[in-house]
Amino acid sequence: MDLFSNVIESWHDFYMMVGAAATTLVGLLFVSMSINLDLIAHEENADLRELAIQTFTNFINIIIISVLFLIPNQDHLGLGLPLVGVSGSGLYITVIQFYKVLRSSSQIWNRSDLTRHFATPVVCYLVMTIVGIAVLFEQTGSLYWLVPTMITLIIGASVNSWDLLLQLGKPTIEK
Image (tube, rainbow, N blue to C red; front, side, top):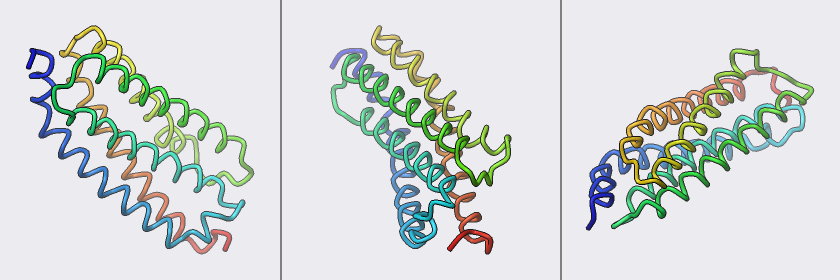
């Protein structure tokens, strides 16, 4: 094993824990959305549906990145290219979901909510893109920037899940 693979291997436990946490939370999100499918499906609740998509995307991307770090004998191209791809797709989906929420007729979120739900992941995905590019050049020191990024994404997605459940529980939601 070369030096790069050894460095990536040293991140194994962190990404095992983060991936397991994200997998558990995405499962709970899936169950809660399934239970409330009739509410989420209504056009009047498009904002909730877009936030659910954003939250699901964040959890899935955390899982994918965690899996990338668990691949044995990983090299800089095998990690860097997927990191750039995952972060790019996450950034794209986040921006699309944000614009859909801005254009929807029933805005239940204020500006600070929108910032928390959408701007924070944009910053995280931009950092991931930069780290992915650095990894392509075998700069393993940049991997430490993924720690606050992954933690921020998982906390943000968890808070989004909580907000979704609180909104779904309100009696004013169109049934």
